[in-house]
Length: 182
Image (cartoon, rainbow, N blue to C red):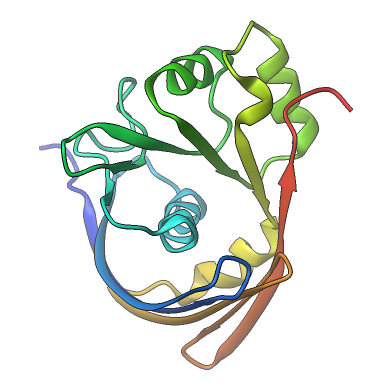
């Protein structure tokens, strides 16, 4: 019998002064058996930091080749924002940029690794793809605090994330990086 996904319930009080977004988000997220906690946490942060009407997690799961881990769909069912996590291939970025008017990537990888991958093939609208590097130490600090029911207070100001969870206060940078060679 194949292992089943683990479902987590998150309540996140978001105060994102960088984009003037203040809301309490209450959602469930399934962790695929092959998915690391770091990847799960990055998806949670992406959900909170890009949150807008129509955002949702992929129905196909994190291993879907044709769907992003998160997306924003308008009222007519059209894909508006493709939100990827990790180090998507250049081919995947190309497909995303053709499918959606906005592409956002959240990753804890070194920017140069992302640039090398993006340079391995021609990518449609490469310069328009938004990439945010989540400080790996922040994910490491959050990992021991992930529970089936988790509550966060998440504050984003001047590209720094401050997260209060249980009895811990964690912080780290959220850097916007370019995929074009520097």
